[in-house]
Length: 225
Image (cartoon, rainbow, N blue to C red; front, side, top):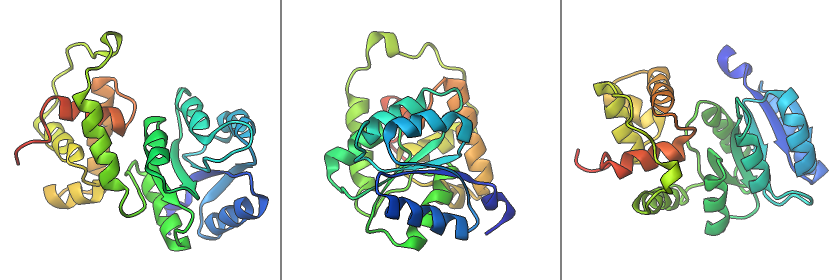
């Protein structure tokens, strides 16, 4: 693991002590900085600000506060963490609800240790990470949301002009490509792609990839080349 990856701070939220400890141990052994753990939703919300985690590995089935509500509350922070859901459920409704609540990725608990470690790293980088078979489902939901009219009070005012490169990256994001795939397609570094996406989010005053993809699809940027 590189020095950049060693700096990734992770919080693990799961109500099963053995599972929570096992995940935290695997992450720590791989060089991640496990800054906090929590056994229920309220504890997670309470501890998150001080933990300042880059990534929260979050179970959905929590006893007091559902994982999707925990995710929504985390997204309200001034500097929200990225959320990787790690759940026993692979039900489509659960996946879509998690994404709509702000989760960056979704893995089922049958994932291997290697898959989890890779998913945490990619989530920290802002890449959407999904158990195989779920990524297409999520992109389909992006398209459905984009086809629905946004509430009047949610409409974005005239957007600042994006650069040609930012528009090119946005077009590929709307097609569902990962940051690595975009970097390979445009012959850019992974970090450069991340920077373009972050700059675009800031210019458009959007908060996450769901909103960004919806914006792009609404403007037809997923069509054509």
